Length: 351
Image 1: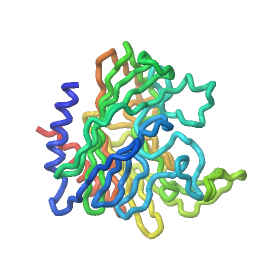
Image 2 (image 1 turned 135 degrees about the horizontal axis):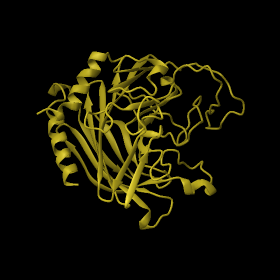
Image 3 (image 1 turned 60 degrees about the vertical axis):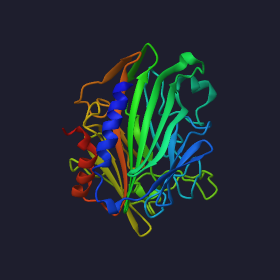
Image 4 (image 1 turned 180 degrees about the vertical axis):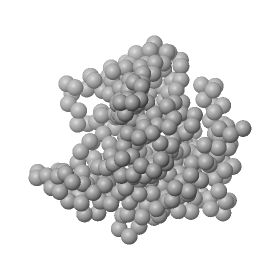
């Protein structure tokens, strides 16, 4: 944990010095809510850290672009008309994994039948350690437990210690997530799995146009009984740091991936970034046209048979650290603009 705190302090100090011109910064505030912490940028809602007891993991939900529009899917919490009704575990912006000691933390949701719950893990919020506004953004520090299906103390596989750093710039909102996982069980094994790790399920506007019929929700959240093919409003498009576009971005290794889409007359760019300090950098990407946008540092051969099969084992007390950035900007960011944000994010590794 000492190493984690040291990395955190270095990360935060350097990030605070490299975020662009002072006049472009917006005030970020944190407000405690019932089972959550709301993030306001320039007085307007950005997102909320939610840890409702009904959820199988804490999430950032909802997520607003600088123009106020929602970029996340509402289903299943707040279904909106013409949304896909698949994958109820895809909720907001979240972090977990599909195979930890054989338990599936990714696919767990209210939709899993009771007789199958023994195969699924869940992540439980334990503590808000710190929530404070700073001169450059705001920081939320939290602790969580990754639990096997049993609910006694012996079911604790991992302790997660995460710092969210929220930054506001003119036309751009940023979440930097610094994650530490410490093994509590004698042995914790992560197996090569495509279901991971930091992910967002996006609004229909950011989906790729589909050539397959799917089921949608109506205005009341009810699922349509007849599958339909309807691409109205869907105009999302992926592009990664290596120049792969559209469906070709899935499974590739890349430093960052952009998902661009227009909602009404406003174009928006969602960008996820890997960090050179992360294991298996640059990561593989679980970037699906139907609206799942995810970076996965532990999935390898499951994406690309030319990569080695990956298996990571932690002994009790050992830690695994990740740094990721989620960037949400008005307009269609160019590669050069994204590279500027990427250099800012990764500068903490420089002497």
